[in-house]
Image 1 (cartoon, rainbow, N blue to C red):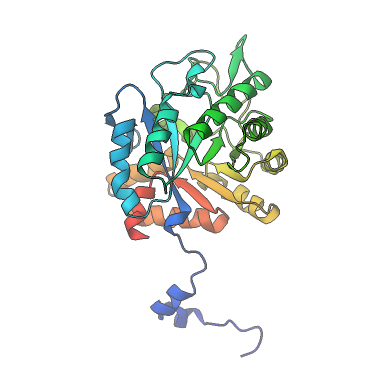
Image 2: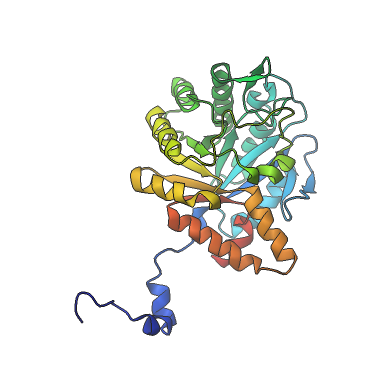
Length: 325
């Protein structure tokens, strides 16, 4: 064989199923996946299916404990929690309350499943009466005044037992503010997963139904990224690393695989990607119509996200796919 010849001719490799499996370059595994959950405050026993996200539920804190039993037995390693509080106000006061919906849920989960990694979303949109990710004054989102509220929220989550906090607000400087607050209270080992590259995407619609967090006015384009920008993603990512982020997120995943791959090539840090609600719901809708094999398409999509460079993937398919991995 000369150096220019392939190691295997395609025909021979295709016909050797066992060998093909052995030399597969990317393999999706249980520890790659994180399941998101929506925790409601109004009823501890609630289990309400989300109409725009078939198979996903708003769960009360007690219902969530039961929901976790089977996935944990099947190898679920990590979850991310989003809160749906009863009370909302302009200051997002419920976000950092020590007995808030997320704080109470984290405490219960860590007692019941101490081995499960609990990641918490740190944002104000679920807790503000106007639905924006930051504090608002005269109709405008105020970046700097929001940082204290985010830092307070992250601290309260860690004090409740969260293993990792994930700021998703896209305010400038929030990673540094959170890192400083955690360090000042002795939580120097608790990592930050920053939504460093979060686009102002049309794929978030079902999530806003689930989290009841749609903005009452305007949109989030003033602080989330323009879908047309790639170089900006690199700047945002480098800035968050400099501020102390331990892991970076790209959101959504599928439409921005080129961005994910660019970060993988340029940054030597762990990367996460979020297969968001719209991506999930499109596949589920096609599956229900009989147009696609939902399981195979989900596995293929997630494999593609990992191949592009993600170390971990947040996906609503996680618990459904655990038995297959």
